[in-house]
Length: 117
Ligand code: FES
Image (cartoon, rainbow, N blue to C red; front, side):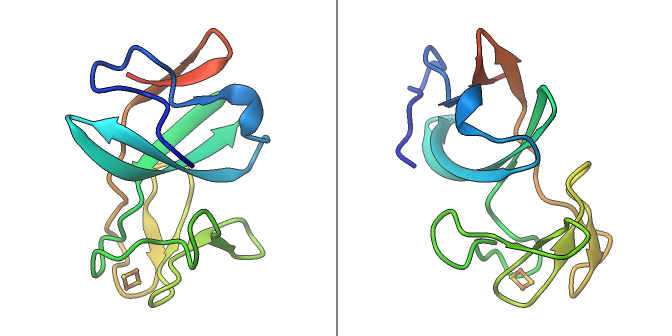
């Protein structure tokens, strides 16, 4: 998804309605002046975000842009070597980087949209 925000964060990353409850969404956003791929996860009215970078070998987690593998119990699974991450703290709970975590990006929900915090 193309970035909606600018370097000063004066536009939202994405409308909240674009993210179904429980879903993952890949977006591109400018963070600290650099275009980054982010993973957004909606949990009710809350949204968490992480860089789309696996702590194991630095690869993107999606197998195609915006297409994520999910386990039966809702973990997101890195398409490269199968590391599995829970979607609370983004911790790897199985696989080659067990115990490490995705790098969080602070976001907030306001005015019906997700913003970089
Ligand atoms: S890069 Fe994700 S498991 Fe290896």
